[in-house]
Amino acid sequence: MIANLVDRFRRQYDFFVVTRHNDGKFDPRPYSNVIYGDWNEISGAMVFYLAQNEFSARRAAEFVAEVDPSLVFLNSAFSLPVISLLNARRKGKIRDVPVILAPCGEMAPSALALKPVKKALFLRWAKAVKLYDKVIWKASFDEEKRHILRQFGPRSDIRIASDLVSRSILPNFDLSQKPPKNPGKVRFALVCRLTRMKNVHYFLDRLSQVREGEVTFELIGPLEDKEYWNECSEIISRLPPNISVSTTGPLPQNEALERLSQGHFLVLPTLNENFGYAFIEALAAGCPLLISENTSWGAVATENVGWVLPLPDREAWNDRIRKCIEMDGPSFSRMSIMARDFAQEWLGRAGHDEATKNLLESAISGEVNVS
Picture 1: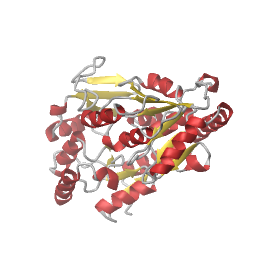
Picture 2 (picture 1 turned 90 degrees about the vertical axis):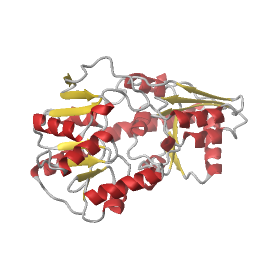
Picture 3 (picture 1 turned 180 degrees about the vertical axis):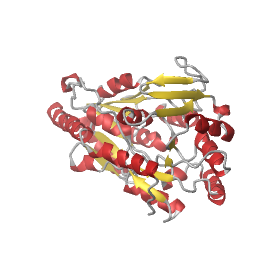
């Protein structure tokens, strides 16, 4: 999201980004192609990389004093860098500056249900000390606004602005590059950081019921939660021989998209998806969607570019998997073309930039919006 924000608005604003020097807690290796502990000029922004143990309220205050920003934009309500900056703010170590906070789906009931005790205790403390006092919450859609309101009450300042995606996805894509779709064979794909929230084991359980046809399921991206992956691996070991599951590990985005384009359908039985970059990327790659009801992408069903199925209805999932296996080439080609067209039309909508522009401008000007 931040890369797309910079790309859209770097001509209006100067961006200074502070982030981890590695790809998350499950991959502690520092990036090898950046300068560590200093500013890097990358794609129109100045970026500073820090080790996990270097994030602190004092360090956050130093960055704010050095950059002297007109606005601070934060991703995640629970991450250490965000908590460090908000702690510095509540202790008076940084000047009064507008703060936009995008919780990225973390306030959804399904997200709070993972590690619930830890999150409940933290939120109780955060509310007691007013950690989030006077932040501007960025919700991606109406449902996320309701989740934030449920946690922080009607006096919260919540603005809705859809997450930004790349201006163009696979611009040279040609539908003739898609693999043939023959009845009896299907390629499912998923692009994600594998975590329990993605609910991949649910789909693996559904595949365990498939005894006919040839099914390939490729997981594209890092296996971030190793404990959860071990649980998935145990299911994979018991799948029938007509089911093949493979993983790629982390890939550069362009390579991940190319791998995705070699699938027929993207599948994600997610417990919660705040926006779902993988959905628009898959549609742009000519992959119709097979997803749970826990997303904001219900339009794919009405536009005939995918299916939205409730997780409790296991038989509906089983039936749809069978129909994907049985689908013939001409039927798939028509659906794939519609998926690509849907993505192209969606990417061309002007309203995405406008909502974010209004959010940034109103925050900088000090405009207050109480729900």
